[in-house]
Length: 400
Image (cartoon, rainbow, N blue to C red; front, top):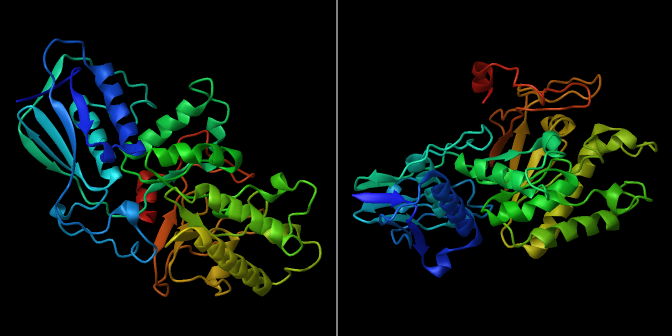
């Protein structure tokens, strides 16, 4: 009989103890301290061990060519995000081949045996304290992820800006990333503008893939912030835009990144909204501009990153142009389709412009697909981000 208690220790070979794995181990150790009384009884060992069974591609090593071909057929193949747990006598062993496999395995122990649910912190759930947990000999094999990249975007983080769990404000974000990992997520947009750049290293250190807001190409700093005295016009200042994109790539090149390719205006609006010179007075000119900029962004990323993973958000006016065939995208770019902000898979409105173009693949598209779905939204006209979601669960389920 295995006994998990306050004296249980987590051990593993040094090369397995990467930052994300150490972070997950620290979470489990915190939970053990919170939930168990002190005892003189010996606690079982939690052992991290590299899986030696044959593998398919690990999610942490995915390339743009492989990302559409992740097929996880056999549990024994142990992809990088899966884990196998065996409990025998005084040892609980977590087998994995990727660091997220160990992360998810450690968090599984927290939930399954300690009772820590994914949103325990956000629901103010106090732990039921006990002396020990006895676990029969068993084997657990994790489920295979149905979707390669799964995550959250803290959309404008309106309710996170002023609230601070600790003085520096970072601990609240860390708890949000922990909840994402507990839910089986592996991808995050860690905020917008300044906040995203402040948070992305922490998210990466926890094992998450980083991607970006649909108005922040490659996660770069906004032009108006970097060059406040210059007009944010790409045709007039291309070198400055290129410099910002390149700096962003250099800053993130050692992280796991899904590089967001895009070109919207400053402040999350169509870039032609401020066009006073008629340079983009037709949809063809707008689509051509976006296509050229995306190609340039791809070139910059490839300069620093081997086999990068790319995505682009077909959001709002971008979806309208794409649907008309005016935006050219390589087949290795993940196309992420968005709802209108309120849960319906059609293009969002902009002031009095409400095209409601269906934003779902229609069978003509090849390549990789994704969905960007709002459960909270603020479009400068109306908001639901301080209320519960007003749509029914059945409606959301139908759309997804």
